[in-house]
Amino acid sequence: MQYLPPEYEIKVSSRALTVSESALARTDAAIFLIEETQASRLMKSLPHASLWSALQRAAGRSSGAAPLTSRVPNGRHTLVAIGFIKADASAFARLSLAGKLAREVLQPGVATVQLHCLGFAAGAQVELLEGLLSAVLAGAAPMPERKRKPTPRCALRTVTLNARPSAAYTRAVEIARGNHLARWLTALPPNVLDCIGYRKALQQLARREGWSFRYYDEGALRRLGAGAFLAVAQSNPHRGAGIVRLTYRPRVRRRGKALHIALVGKGICFDTGGINLKPHKSMYLMHGDMQGSAVAVGTLLTLSRLQSTHSIDCWLALTENQIGPLAYRPQDIVTAMNGVTIQVVHSDAEGRMALADTLALASRGNPDLMLDYATLTGACVTALTDRYSGAFSNRPALNGWLQEVGARSGERVWCFPMEEDFDTELDSGVADVLQCAIDGKGDHILAARFLSRFVAKDIPWVHIDLSAAEHKGGLAHIPSEFTGFGVRYSTFLLDDVATLTRELKTATP
Image (cartoon, rainbow, N blue to C red; front, side, top):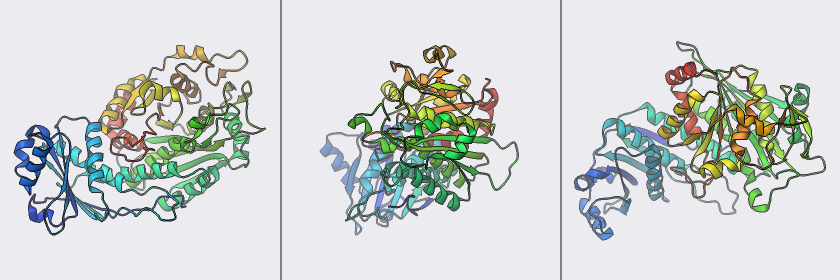
């Protein structure tokens, strides 16, 4: 089983298409997205209008709400799916409908797909087609498996958008590529992607993409004083844990100050819970506890393929959290890289330990913005369900923008409070800080407060607790249980350089 996903090549083009029976006869499948309030009128203009009218009558409605799907009577038996949505629908609603429509048409043998939007203003049409394209690409992306009879690969080779070319469509292609990488890595079984295999995968990826690669092994981390990370790694049966730094630098310098971005990801390749052992149900999908790191590297892939003007360092904390005679224990006291001493409370709060030293190491580069991603707390899932992810920042002025980007991208986040008085819950009588509270209340907030101690105060920092990283049946346009949530969000956040620069300037400590 290969570490990196296959580079599936799907040709995407944008051009004016005639909405006619002859045009439909030249494609294997087509999706039509129709403005819901104009459905009755617009349906009459569709090719094979009588077929759709009959399907609507059979469904007992005069105007569409749920999608309609059928093969049309032409020589190719073109598969057509029609969806209905209001022009002011949210990005999440657009992506959710796009996912349903993509699943309807991505059937065996479908190699060419047309995408159409009818009844929308130009700006809304771009957003809707971008969502449809994103859904089709996500649905066509292969996922890891090891079957004697492999699942047939999706046959899709060409997607044609009935529209003028737009940078939004180019961005959608690269976001889909980064999201696919994140989901693929997360879905790999833990006997393939342990932290040693993960390092090899990242080396392969760095060579392919032209990034620089640096690995801090346990010896190097011991010399740096990374006691928090090493406490988690000490029970591993190997000495292969470490922190990987991937570096992207833009090839072309553009006008204005280039921003330095640090992406940090939790890469716990399997989490047993350590000496505070998880029960079976909680441990079953813990090979996915490295999804924060996968999202960080997927974001890096997307931004570098888009030739971002940012200088980006991607820091990935790679280890397992194993059970054994050397496992770190409650009441151990360890010292992190920045000198902060930590009183251990629970071995299953390992993510914040590994991130503590990784954030401290990344802070030494003094980035203009630091983003970290982690499947960190069950408390965040309890607070938000697995449809939103939690956002936390040491710059409260960023909160409105962070949530607005979530609403605009369709990967929704909710910002939680970060006041200093929460720190009293982490007071320790024998160390600088408790690892976590004993009772677990508000653990998502306390985890963020804990992590803030390892980020230099002059660095704007955003922590994403990925409560939406795993959603049964997929989420929005993503069909797999591991969603790769965060790649799309981060690209929307970082790709608009002018807005990002303005927001960072107005966000005071």
